[in-house]
Length: 532
Image (cartoon, rainbow, N blue to C red; front, side):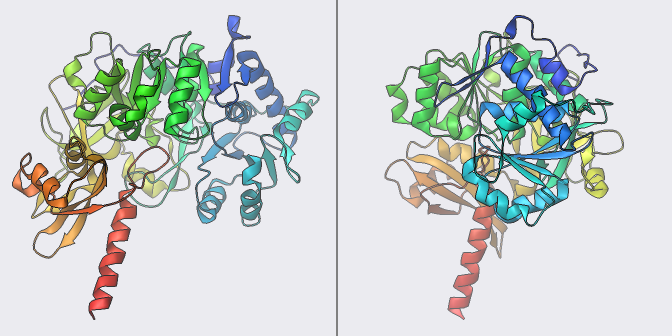
């Protein structure tokens, strides 16, 4: 069956991304659009638009036109939004890079995207020069100043005195505004082609819930190079005329202090941050009373952790769901009359979005209560993967359904619980075991601070679940395995426990299970070699 959105449909404005967000400022011109969290430096809406337009002409004078690609590799700064809009206004497309990527990863993305300009920060200049030699990058531009690179402020100044013609956006439904990279449901990282219409549609879809209001202060600790930070936080707030406070990196004490100093009202976070807000003792040292709600996304959030955070902070906690290929939001569990008993779900589909739950083996559509792969369809679904029609066809079918690769189940109201990634399911004697379910259960133990569960090959069972655990108190492996065994079906029991100091995670907060799987394989190989 097809699960329709319970929310009224939306009309997608036929506008470019920047016209949609900054075309008409009204009385917002002198209102702070961005505040740099550590310094308090303010960029108003008027400054943002004027500087973006000037930088666009500066880029156009250098040859940036329709379809040209500019790479942005930077932590969160107010200038990130200025640069992104400048590229869009000029008719180009931004590919966003993680500053923590290896040089080889940067080179691969730069070459695949065809980027000709590289915008970064002075501390990353040497790395930028190193990758420039292996790519088609023609010029390095920095926020601030650095010898041997063009200052972004100079680009703006040049643009103000330039009569360079802007190519602009010819067709919002076809022209790309951003090219983030994603591994999709499997395989190598691929360029996700998101059009102006894709992103405008998605902002219009989730803005229909009224999460952010004009007087809100939105904390941007999640990176803008990630689609969650770029579209939901940075762009969603601008659509409403709110103020965004930027943080260049996550540090718990700095995060809490920034909330307190700037009286942040809206927090977009990931599950590890929700866990810290629920359990960490330092939380009691800060005044977080300004916070109206906390939204968690990018990875599954357990119900117990969500409830514990909600009770401790004294504000609403809810979840959203999506993926880069969907610009990114497809589901949201928010509404004035939302059933608080749904806190463990990511909600129904957002306006204009359909969903199916499909059997992993047969591909047949399923009904409420049945687990299968989540498929979604709507105007926010990507144009496709760059230069990769095969991967595009594997991910988006002929009827427009995006195959997410995530396993979920919907209730009678269409509220969906994400069980796990299909590719990460543990197959124990033919039974499917979801790592996220075991992780959520282990996190409810008072002596567990963090956890990741992976499949470990077993001759008899095929796979067995192994838990890597960061302890919050004294506890032994047997006690934790018994704790799980008392609460799950026998085939779901954790069979091995190993203690770590830290669980590896991506910048967006997703557990990097592949890192742990590779680590486990290397250890098995080393043990086998030693035995021989």
